[in-house]
Amino acid sequence: EPEVTQTPSHQVTQMGQEVILRCVPISNHLYFYWYRQILGQKVEFLVSFYNNEISEKSEIFDDQFSVERPDGSNFTLKIRSTKLEDSAMYFCASLGTGGREQYFGPGTRLTVT
Amino acid sequence: QQPVQSPQAVILREGEDAVINCSSSKALYSVHWYRQKHGEAPVFLMILLKGGEQKGHEKISASFNEKKQQSSLYLTASQLSYSGTYFCGTAKAAGNKLTFGGGTRVLVKP
Image 1 (cartoon, rainbow over the protein chains, first blue to last red):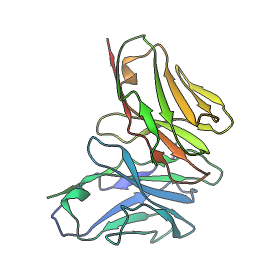
Image 2: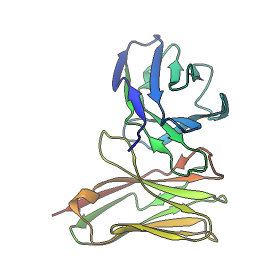
Image 3: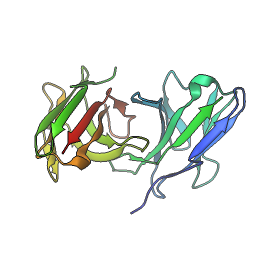
């Protein structure tokens, strides 16, 4: 069964550094999402991406964040100048045209020290 | 505005039943149910579309009451593997982001 993959599984970085989280969505999917989950809390929406542009973003997704689809397969989330409060699990999800289920990747645990 | 889930937690004995509710103050296109085990990604259980349908997966089923904008997840004859945190995610239109509720922690004991 096709699945969403994410790398790395765990990233440790120092405050102020930039990180790039990578996702490979399911190959024929067209809608892509980033969510995050702070430990012990609910899953929060960050941004959605369709047709090579951001379709919606939350108030969390400020200038510190950016997304890119650099090629036909990868979907990346860049966090510039990380803060302690950026520590969380970051999940990528994708959805196919006509599909309804958002398939979640296994997540990247980001730890900012 | 996020959907409201209740209860926040439930403890069951193996074989017992439970109901988890998810309510929204806004009109919904769909309600998605996920189960998350500690340290893992949410796993999709089922999706309910407006129209009041009911779906099931093994002994877990769900309904969506469009008039009330409320979905309920039914855990029937619970198994140890049902333990985890259940989240409902709601969407206002096809392809839209999911807005998740606060989660319901379920613990099934032998």
